[in-house]
Image (tube, rainbow, N blue to C red; front, side):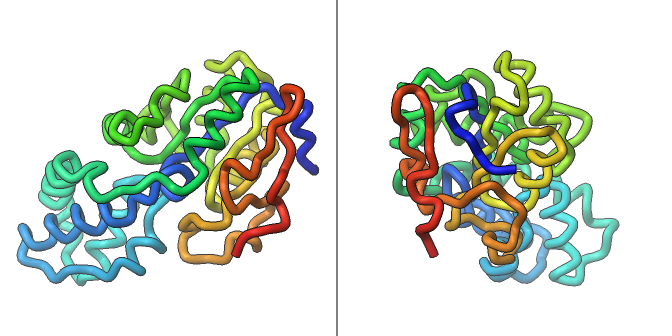
Length: 233
């Protein structure tokens, strides 16, 4: 399926790795949690390969990486939540072109929802801190529904909230999680070329196009087109 943006009227946008570079926040919170438990710190590269599938997945992978017993999980979870809440957004940066791209979509009359596997509390606080919350009619975190991306349920529920059919709702993300969820939900999907994608080359993902910046999605006559589909790293 190829994207025909002239048929779209809404968009679902991922958060971490798509709108905001949150890797420094993840690393800082994990390192603070590990230090509290007397465990060694982890490398940022490991974190970049591990984010995107929810906090529980990230935490379990981190404990396994440092050789900690599974029995530490509950203590680690409580410590991580506390540290992340305190650090959320402090070191994160909005990607170049992200706010501008959202503005163009909003100006064209598109309805927007943010769907992320990040806990909803942290997602809403981050969007508010970065000034991006104003673009979204709805924000759904990884705890909003019974299943997370790559399951299609969050996208289908977001389409329902936006009042748009999946085929007319563009998914914009940075990873195979986003693409798989979009495919299963029946949404067209564009991926940014600068995100995390679990440490794998994003152009190997089954998507309908790629953009180097969100403002490469050009808007004309109320429709978007892939202005930068062939560009980017």
